[in-house]
Length: 329
Image 1 (cartoon, rainbow, N blue to C red):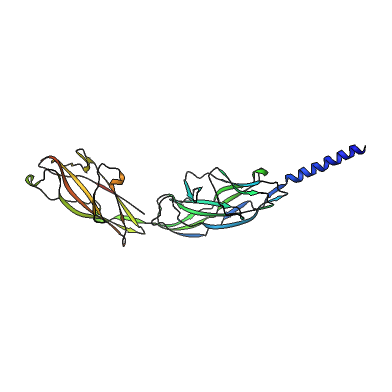
Image 2 (image 1 turned 180 degrees about the vertical axis):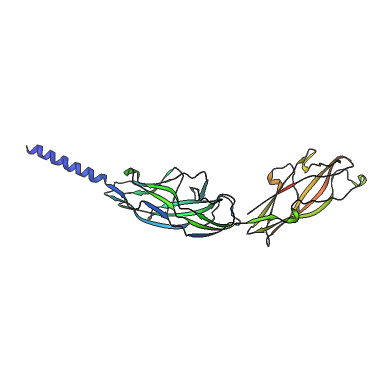
């Protein structure tokens, strides 16, 4: 009889120890808000797409986010990002973050979190789980922060960013225990670069001199006419002029002639830092683009146009249409 009682007592003790080893957890903070400033000023001049518009902001320390009794070893806290509507990604120091849309054109936000006792940041990545904390902890905290990223063209103005959920934090070992991660709302005061072609360069006509047949060389260029095109800019550092037109079938570097003369096309060239370079009519975009620095609110590009002969010339007119597209940052 004594032997039977001893076995029963031992089984009860083992059952109690097993229950104690499993432990339990509860959510101490069900919603974590990254406290970005209520108003942020951004100067977007000179900032390329995919680059930061701000530093890391809203550093937020959350203690006792999860509370565990008798925690088991090797617990992990994971972060899983919510859907990001294809806003892209941003990589810094070897860590790739999902860029979440803010509702403001050209502006996204990325999120980083870490263990309060460690220096390594974990990213919020759309639909992917990343480990943040890996230990046997009784009380779990979290450090979180945000950074705004340029995702496209931005406009000057004052824009409201609504509070937005960006991720879920969870302890997988304990099933459904989770906390939601949000970025608080803010107001973005954006100063964006703008450039416009000078009024005289909109529908600009460059008139070349008239030549007699006897004065036309056997080949190459003649009758150069210098001029310049310019853009008036605000908060921009560089302006880019992209030239587009129809290439001449007899010489892909020159522009076609839609006039009545034959054997003659149009040569277009730019001059930057004293160097004259042909604008290649049939080349790729890089060979037809010229980048100019903005000085005192103006970007000026010296140009030259000329006739270009490759064959027998007949009398008539020479004309071509070239479109200039302006971009800037």
